[in-house]
Amino acid sequence: MLGGEVQKEIFMIGISKLYCGTVEASDPLRYERHSAKLPSHLLQFSADKKPVVVWNVGQRCNLKCVHCYSQSRNKKYKGELTTEEGRKLIEDLARFGSPVILFSGGEPLLRKDLLPLAQLATDFGMRAVISTNGTLITKRIARELKRIGLSYVGVSLDGMQATNDRFRGVEGAFVAALKGIRNCQEAGIKVGLRFTINRWNALDIPEIFNLLEQENIPRVCFYHLVYAGRGSQLVEEDLDNQETRKVVNLIIDRTRDLHQRNKPLEVLTVDNHADGPYLYLRMLGENSARADEVLTLLRMNGGNSSGVGIGCVSWDGSVHADQFWRHYSLGNVRQHPFSEIWQDTHEPLMAKLKEKKKHVKGRCASCRWLDVCAGNFRVRAEAVTGDIWAPDPACYLTDKEIGIR
Image (cartoon, rainbow, N blue to C red; front, side):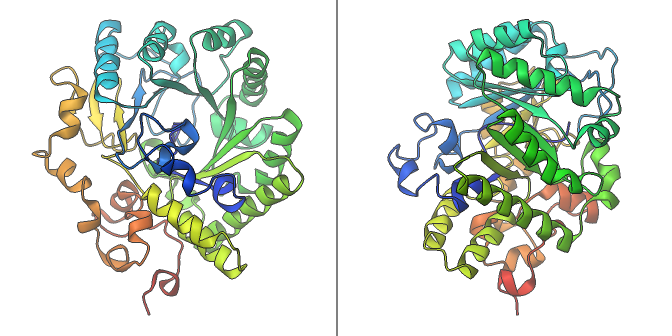
């Protein structure tokens, strides 16, 4: 899988929230923008940015996705955190105030102690969510996930049946995932889709919207491609700037259509913070009365939060700035608690990520949307240019749009 459905929306632009007005700027202010107080749908607007943590509980997966950031295969891996080490991690995160833990992989449901670990997180008052390919969610598993108080299940579908199965590398993955979604719905668990956009599947997006309606799926996250893991081999399969703009417009248009027909699905885009200014500029062009309020909300969001509001713990205990920084470890929870590693600004990369807007270069440094985007994805910049602080090549805004004449 490429990106985690984190339900914290740190990397997300809420198209339905912003464009269709399901969130007002006053909503997060009522909770003083404090992450411990905010409901999940407002967590991206927190002021303290306590980190949501993606824990890759294991590397093994029963699928062979071509874009997998963890490069998972269906085999046993050594060196994963034990149950006791996992318990210590969760206890530390709860004390530290991390509002959400996302159990990811590999395929997290292949880990035998996943359910009691997720139960521990909810017992500590954390929101626990799972990012899964959905193929292993039986009726029994769905009931157990409901019983332990899981907040959300994000299921990956990267196209309709033929496209998805090609992308996943296993025939029948689409049908099995859809069955897992239905089992979650039957058990009363909120479930949504995760879709990673690329040239292979962009044409499937209209049918994905149709599927959402047909299956009464309340949420979908459209992920931009991040060049990490096996995804680093797909740079040429990413959309170019004009193609990206067309896809983002399509997503906005279909979201508006749903809301106009009184079908208020939650639609988000993920992993490209250029979507925020682009949405605002589109609203200005449409003379939307909400445009200024949307800009206020985007500034509350603050853009990319790697190393600040989002972190990752790998299967071996390594701590990363987010789930795509797997090539750079900030420390290991086997030696030091996550809370200590996260606050240690003696680590050079961590120190710079805490103030990344001071270090970005080129177009990013001159961009008038820097306070909204925060320089977008450093991993993507490094993958293409070799320079962590170079402009993100996936930014599709023109020089005029970012204020460079």
